[in-house]
Each structure stands twice: as C-alpha cells, then as structure tokens.
Length: 448
Image 1 (cartoon, rainbow, N blue to C red):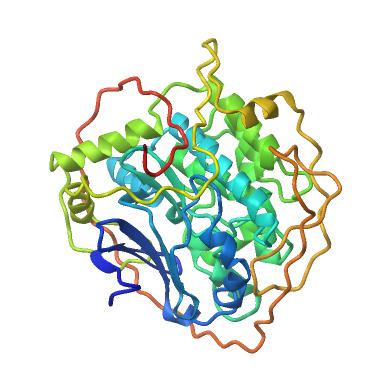
Image 2: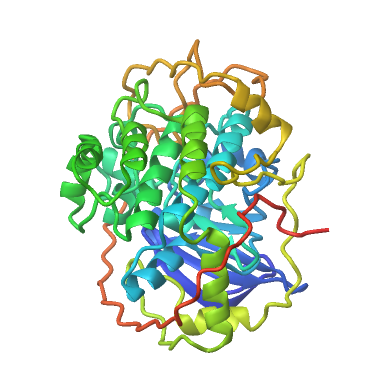
C-alpha cells in the first residue's frame, strides 16, 4: 500500500468483509487505522455523496470513544482514524477461539455498556446533522487499546455490500449479513435501535464464542436475520444465563417499535451487569493478551489474505514492542470520559456522571413508531420520525430530518471473488490467574 496523506503503512493489515484495515504511522509516531474498501466499491454513492453529507460530524463527532475521521478519500474508499495501537474485537475473538473458550459474560456486558454509551451519544449528536446511527457495526469496527480504552470506528460508513445487494448490484458477504438488523435488509429507515441490535449480536459472540447467526451461507443467514430467528433461539435452552437471554431476545425483535433499544436497552444492560460480576473484565482480557505478547508467548505466521483474517501474532507482538509510542490525539469532546461500570450487587454504588444519575431516575419512554417501508437508499438510512422516543440523556435540539435518497440504479459493481484460506495460526496464551480488576471506564485516548 502506498503512502496515504503523509502516513506510512507499518505492514499490519487484516481483512474485513468489504475491504482491508491497514495500520499507518505519522511523523510523530502516532498510529492510525485506515479502512480501505475493495476496488468494486470505489466511487459508490454511499461512500462518496453519502459520506460527504455527514462528513463534518464524522470529523468532529464531539463524542468520547468515537474516533474522529482524520483523513478521507471517498472516491478511492479510504477512511483514516487516529486510533493509536489497537486490537479490534475481532482479533480478541479469534485469539480466544484458538484457545477453545469464550471471553465471558462480564466482558460481554461491559462491552455493551461502554460501546452502548458511545453509540447512543453518537446517534444523539449525529442526528442533528443527518447521521442517525452507526450503520455498519461489526466486531471489526470496535477496537480496544492496550490501556483498556474502547473505541468505535467507522461511524457513518454503511455496509455497502448489503445496500448493493438490496439494489440487485451485488451479493453481500456473510460476515456483513450476520450482524445486520432486519430493517437494513429491507430498506426501512434505521435509528439507534439498529445499533443496539448489532451490539447485542456481537455481545452474544463475546459471551459464547460463536455468532448467534452462524454459518457461511449468505442466503441462509439472510433468511435467519430477516425473520429474526435469534429471538426464537434465545427463547429455547441456550448457553446464556436466563436473565441475559431474555434481555438479548427483546433487543433482537424484528419490529423496531416493539424492540428493546436505546436508553431502555442500556438500563437493562446496567442491571444485568450489577448481577453478573463474576468472570474477567475487558481490562483483564486485554492485559492478559498484552502480557502474553510481551513475554513472547505467541507463535507468529505470515499474513494470509483470508476473508476474515485479523492481525497475525507477529504483527501484534511488533505493535506491543512499541508500547512507548506517543498516545493518539484525545477525542474532541466537551467533557471527559468518566463513566464507570456499575458496582457489584450489594456494594456501594459508584457515580458515573450526572447524566447517568438523571437517567436512573427517569422511566424509559415508549418505543418510537416505525415508518412505512422505503425505497432502497444509496445513502446511510435515516430514522423514522417519532412523537415518542426513549428517554434521552439530554433534550434533543431539533427533530430528525430524513436523509435524501440516492439512486444506485445506474451503478455497475462487478462481483468480488476472494479465495478462502484456513487460518492455521496456533496461538498459545499462558493461563492467567483471575485477579480482581477495577471495572473499565470510558476514558480519553490520552490521559492528562
């Protein structure tokens, strides 16, 4: 990959469903993550006109934990974010799959709690500028730094292959479909409940080690997602604790009007987290992987261009060897990231901010009314207007405005064929003794 925007590739890269993520480094030593879409998607309207419509928000989101867009070339499908050295959640899932066990329930609920706050605040701020949801949340778009900070990437970049398939211009990847909400497959306008649905699917995988919508057949996955089969699966005996399964099932309901989402979903996650304090936290998971790499416990192999391959062990070890790099720029936000995970049941309650304190006292409002089905948009879908909305953390300053639809009828997108290769990496981690750790917080990417 050639130099982009004065940033030099480090050689670390891995596949995601519709492109490749590259690690870049600037002259000051700060590392960036570039999302580079595959050539068939270059020039697609949702990556050009669609992004330009909301680009000012993507560059200045004013949301702690949402990484700002620092450089972009929409025509070539390149979007760069100053993340620092990070592991995507997909990488952590792969490591634990190689070990033969899941990450666990506490880490899964902490993931929902931390990422959920970022997504809800992002939808609140972005809605005033026409960006009503993430639009493409997958394990590749959630990253964790070695200090435990959680980051959300690619806000506003849609699942372009799913939109193209709706327009009869291509075939969506299985790894795109399995994390998509039903409304994305049918063209109904989305709001933040689509993001909390996708985050619920990701949390299920963190908790169990396998996707809820498993398999590699896009057609079968499309049928399961469009019928919300996950609700039925969670209603039967399954690996989840009963209370978690019930909340997750409500979050996966087909009808957005009846679905548990937004602030009400976050309140349920808070309650679950107070009840499930056993197991490893995200901080412990990241610390163990970081320590194992520093001790040279991982065997490395060359990078293979498999469809869903993450960073190789050698690449991760090389990144950790440079732990003294300058930190990534802090998020542009008017407040610091001081939220804390709720304390264990029976313990002293920890304050995590005035906003959350107010939300605890406010009852959740009824879910919004869904709009009629729309034609397939080429820009990120807009949410339906609503007279009733979930209790916000702050009063919205304006009503949402539907985004203009862009036609894709004249766009020809060739099919993309990439051969699958089995990942034979044998990743070994020394078992770690469970150690009590302070729960993670949403924090700035650079501490004072």
